[in-house]
Amino acid sequence: MTAEMLRRLAEILEKIDNVTVLTHMHPDGDTIGAGFALTYWLRSVGKKANVKNSEGFPKKFSFLYEDYKDMDFEEKAVVSVDIADTNLLGSPLDEYAEKVDVCIDHHKSNREFARQSFVDGDSCATCLIIYELLRNIGAKINPLIADCLYTGIATDTGCFMFENTSPEAHRAAANLIGLGARAAYINREMFQIKSRGRILAEQEIIGSMKFEHDGEIAVITITNEQIDRFGFDRADLDGFAGIPLSVEGVRIGITLKQQAEDPGTYKVSVRTVDTDASAIAGRLGGGGHNRAAGCSVEKPADEAYKTVVAIAEEYL
Image (cartoon, rainbow, N blue to C red; front, side, top):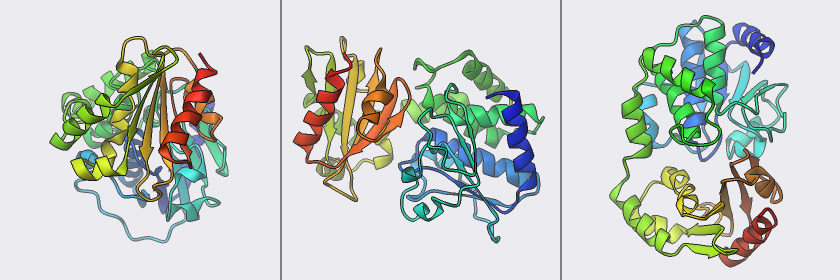
């Protein structure tokens, strides 16, 4: 994000108070890290702020909010973080769809729904934008805020292995470690620790993986029945998205995840090696990044599978 945009964003944040910070449904490390980092910083400079999510925050991120408590105030400003479209707010936060004052995001597919949008589609994570914002204004980044920002940068870059990992991401991570971010602990929690149910589910799901287009497309499907039977947290579902792409020769990895609230809908995660994932997801009303994107398909599993694969094949 340009210095001018960061300056304007800082000026806005300095003027507002009694802030509600919104994060997207099916929260990941970037939206949670950005939401809590911004909230903690606003509180540290004497402002009132709360962070919200339509589904609550997954237990695996509890190290970021163990001592967090909502403040009591009359809301005067609304900021969204890592949200490209209001349909990602989920219920009941969808009531904010027309009320967002400031949007901070890194998705090129951002719909610019807020009164003022600060979007850097070249940034690897919204947490990197917030880090740059705080650094530019000379703000104090305490160890808890450093943990939040490191979590978002690490998770959105796949522990610095994805193509979106930039020199700026590495520099920010190094500086955040210097400011107290627990990198080793966070990396282990985010990328190594798995529940027994998750491990057993992976065995079954990997065993049922399907291949298309001479092995260049790999697809896994995760059903509500499997989630219930193995008893793993739905917050772990994002971790499955990288599995299909880990197979040699696969260029497009697709994960279909049945939705608990609407069993007739499958959330689709697309990961790619050298094709545009956002273009594939965009054909189905979704969006995201060049190598990682998502959408939803309101069809039975077999039809959803055929629909997404047919579109993916066009990009090979």
